[in-house]
Length: 210
Length: 210
Image (cartoon, rainbow over all chains, first blue to last red; front, side, top):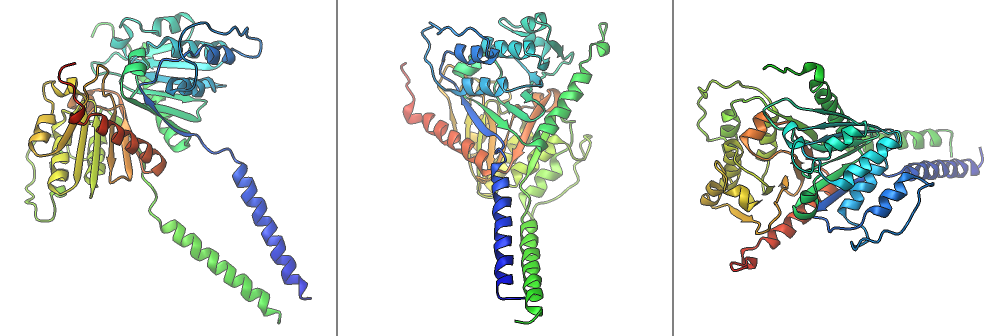
């Protein structure tokens, strides 16, 4: 037991600690983002074409809208990160850009399920009909109250929720917020709520003669 | 340097670690809660009277509503925990129970500031007039878009946000969500947004002859 034994032990401990810290730091930090609206109108063409995949034809868009990052493009990017599943629970859905993104994910093989409000679904500009036409599963309420949620869940991993209805009016004109939360405790609560509503709105439960 | 020196060092290290873990575990866990609506109608009288303080006269309420815990009572409890400040940024505010809670906090010396939407403020049942009458500072938009946020910040520490407008219709009939988040990163983002809007809606900036 020489004087070096203690030193060797201390060095070993320090190395172990350094290794643990480096492993811990290399874990990707969970997404925690807040987006505020109104968002200036920008061209989202490049973002959507890029998301189609490596084989996509990329022609520079000639529209006069500004390029650059904004709350809408950030929201689109979060959505387009989906690889396996997307649950949407939306009071109103009339934004063409967001609807394109959802259809793109559906074509890419992502399992998309949409829950919406029956009254808002009938409003002008609603994208729900187009989504159904594209083969996406949609269910709606049959209640007197509103299905007023506005949330999305990406890959059972990321929750996107807030005050924003997915309408161009809301995106470009209203004061709105959207939180992006990668925290399983919150994701699980909203996923469970989605499954409850999905089952409640199962067409088997419709009563056509109330 | 006897054989016990190493043992003593190990014991000391273990004790230090145990102490650190115990201190860490005793920190109150930050609130992370999700409330879903509709909430069944319950009597919130006892909750509000209790919040007045120790000198309050407590008579059992004779209304026929059910007693017990629900999303509305949980939301009220979170609000009533305010000791210093409350920022409210609400599209619509017509729930009498939530308005009583806010007035109670104001009387208790909590600094309450309210931002709301001008159009919704004029709707039947809006509590904004009563809040102003009670001496609470209220500011509203003068924009064509909606001030569509629905959030509250308690003591610059806790964020309460979601899809829920503070109306009895929404509380009792709609599918809604409210997140309670005690996480300074999110709180700070919403607090900054509140201060921006508070300044934007300063009556000094009103243009009466647009």
